Image (cartoon, rainbow, N blue to C red; front, side, top):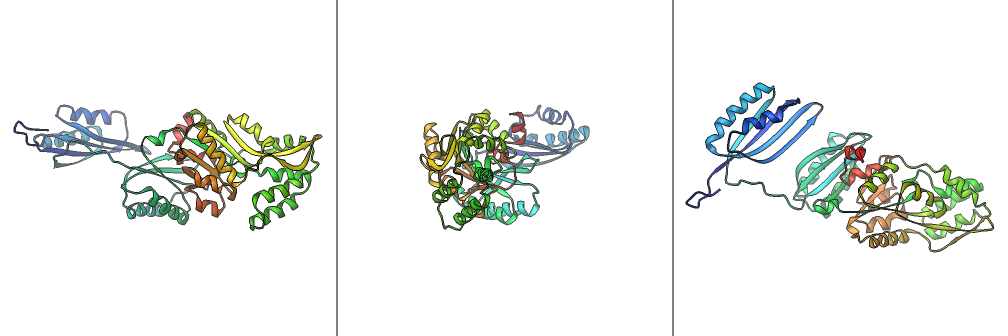
Amino acid sequence: MQTTSGEAEQQFTGLILVSGVDSPGITEALFETLSPFAVGILDIEQVVIRGRLILTVLISLSPAHAKTIEADLEECATKIGVDIATAFESSDQSTIAAKKSLLHVVVLSQTLKPAAIAAIASQIADNGGNIERIHRTASYPLTAIELTVSGADLSNLRPALALTGNEFSVDIAVSPGGLMRFAKKLIVMDVDSTLIQQEVIELLGAKAGVQAEIAKITESAMRGELDFEASLRARVALLKDLPESVLTEVQSEITLTPGARTLVRTLNKLGHHIALVSGGFEPVIAPLVSELGIGHMRANNLEIADGKLTGNLVGPIIDRAGKATALKEFASAHNIELEQTIAIGDGANDLDMIAVAGMGIAFNAKPAVKAAADSSVSAPYLDSVLYLMGISREEVEEA
């Protein structure tokens, strides 16, 4: 505000803190008390936790009105049965400067401990950040809280908090704020042990009576003695002469991971694009794509002749590199920048797509995958991914 001489007129800012048992009419009474005065509302936050209200208001006011406002607020507090604390100070700033380069830190845990929050806050401070706001986004089946942070660099804070998450057994995601947080995204998921609870090759092996042989090949691949393609071809060879009808039988035995339907339904309602990429087999996965309303799929194909599996594969192999390629192609098809893609997986075959995505999420993953990912989900609920995207439980239930 300018005087006639062009000099800035001194203003007061007043911080008002209201706390007490929540009841209808508290907010109304507070602002009716302030309304006779030349007061500007600069900032306001309100939260109710287990029936207890905390309301903070930052106002601009003339110094001449400060004592009268304070007295009227004391009278208001007595009338409505709450505590009201005030703090007034001189200021020549009549507006609140917008914070830039905000980061959103989401913390997930089935049992969130004070030591974890303390360690997270310490890491944020050590990285030059300041916590501007904290709010809960879910309370069941796990706790999710989101911290809005200013002053920290994403490339430094994300790996620092990943170490903290590992130490305290909590899942932490760090993502940039701004308008692009709400942009349309591409979410690409692995299938075996991610979207579904089983490994399809093991289900097929059980039908052929070769579970032990398939397990040996899998163990050899995990020791690095075989690459994915060699191990896949060796395991598929053991399925030779299985009737084609077994694929339908196996599809009926598949169990979705808890939260999978909720995740897909919510993402679809929000207009995001979803794709499945799998080292498994297209005939088994395709019905899921149709049932859930998923837009894209890429998986391996089994060769079938005379109604039986030949023990061979046809077409390109969807391996570690193939999954990353698929993610890039799906993103390009929808004109989505890679920064707006999310990859979710659990195994070494998912590492390349996790690396190339804007956010890579390790879902109940092996340690090497968890270490390489930007974030992780350790709870057995696939819809927990929504919390990492900044979507609350209340919003999920409304979807």
